[in-house]
Amino acid sequence: MAGFRTLDRRTFLRGVGGAALTLPYLDAMVASGTAAKNVPLRMVCVGLNFGFIPQLFFPTQPGGDYETPELLKPLARHRRDFTLISGLDHGVNAKGGHGGVHAYLSGILSKNSSGYREANISIDQKAAQTVGAATRFPSMQFATGFSSNNMLSWSASGVAIPPIFNVETLFSLLFQKIDRDSLIARDARNTAQTSILDLVKTDARQLLKTVGKRDRDKLEQYFASVREVEKRLSQSQQWLRQPKPNVDYALPNGAGSLDFVDRVPLYYDLMALALQTDSTRIITFASSDIGGNYGGFPVTRGYHQLTHHGKVASYIDELRIIERFHTTQFARFLDQLKSVQEPNGKTLLDNTMALLGSGMGNASSHSNRNLPLLLAGGGFRHGEHQVYPQDRQGRNVTPAANLFVSMLQRFGVETDQFNTASGSLTGLKVT
Image (cartoon, rainbow, N blue to C red):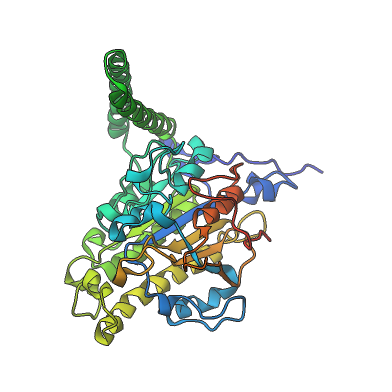
């Protein structure tokens, strides 16, 4: 009896007039007996500019029998799907109050990156190096708004990768079809940009013969940035004529101008769809200020002002409304991932490492110590509050970058190092 033919991952249906329809991730796209090997692992890193109130986020007990603190109650139904981690931070390499937040996913402030082989590369970009052009976007950067302190993604040359704020733009990039004239114009524009970059690179290299060491170092950093842009353009060219996925989802009218409370769920919707359609496997989502109208929250003060609560009860009462919103939306995102079944018999959550955290440990005191970190999914053994020790001076002794080593290893990166890490994170096991 004839068996079923294994379909290519990029199979799409062709119709009259050149119409094309992409297919979802089907069991038939995975060869018999190789499902676990072929279903990709994903990585999502959510970063909050102001962190969480520590006493409302961290349990007082370690292990699996901890009492759920207030801010984690929206996540209670996923208790066995995540690990809560305390006692980790980036030490002196990321000390700087709000200015230290951008080291959340790298462990190193950009100004302190000298001497590191890959500058202050962030974990998402390190992982993206292994993805290459396998997906339309090797990685994507989402953000609720602009904040120079909350630039989460950093390239190997130490350059911040700007996120996209507008949900309508994100939807367009992921799912909006491109007409033929626009396709030709974009193709020509990409080709022209590649040509220009080559010329700039050639001219700049001539300068190396006539400048001093400091300028040579600057030029080398510049060359690295150019190479990264060229690589992105090349990958864009490869995908330009590939049809985008069709999804049964539409943004509400005026989505980009909605209040914060109404926009944030849309970012999470698009992240879930981007992962499900394999448009990308790596996403960072930066959530900073809540914008005008107090973000639509029933509060009377700005978000930043509330974080400097000084233990004033009325400030904390309003701040907990915003912070509980964040954990509620993250819980909803985990619901979405958990509802999608994949060909290896697991859910999209099982195949996605979802990190929630911040480079800010306590915004009220501008502390970058003891970062709030919660890792869900990804095939790890979860359900506990992992507490890491301090030295006699009360300083955390385990680098937060050790967590990133474990995540990178799980993603398939063969490494035991990542920036300031001393190794992988003990206590975090794969199922």
